[in-house]
Image (tube, rainbow, N blue to C red):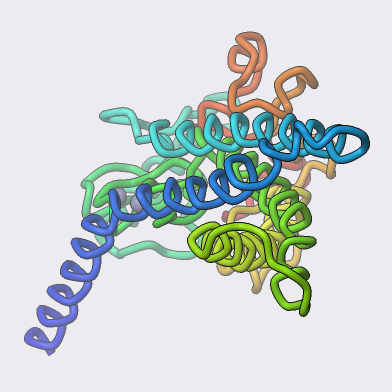
Length: 307
Ligand SMILES: [Zn+2]
Ligand SMILES: [Zn+2]
């Protein structure tokens, strides 16, 4: 028993180290796809088309403006997810004890749960790897080797955990990636069709190869990101993380579900001017504890239930 446990722990460790090593490669891969798309759309087709005159020039101008605007937003969101700490547990974190309601016994219960593992009815959980109490919705990430606030998942594409403090940036990255890859696919479609038609094919072989590669890559990304985006839209609407979605199958009532509008605001903030950029207004950060990742408002009638 002990041996197989140790072997498994070793395998998990190796897997996590491999994932960490993958880090910089994934960033280069993302930048590589951006580079190929840039070359195919801007350098070899729509920038030269600007001088064609008439409708061609107008279409080229629109495509170029959209492409660059979306690219700025995509890269801004991407590097915000990569470089923003998803949220760590402050040292010696303790839950706020509600003295009036006599919730102090919850804390006493946590000492017990330390010994007995994690009983399902305990409200306060404990991480034995980090040796600290876990705030609500916090999970331990084995790749990062630490507890992450409102952990959603560890994302290899951004070489970071996606948690309380960068989930919005991650969603914006998905959103802008979907729009940009769709734009690239549509703008290269005419070239892709000529590629297979019998007519004369303009451009050098290397330009053709890049255009072909960019079209296939962007089509694949657009389709897979769309599926992911749809899944995350439904998660945000229900105020659930990916991890919680797996865990909560057994309980039909979800204590953090405050209705679609408030659930959305818990991720994107209340200020409309900030909804489409990877940042929050000062006022939202001050007023909304959920954005700090330690406390979450819940439905009053479900307060007191286990998470
Ligand atoms: Zn932990
Ligand atoms: Zn992680």
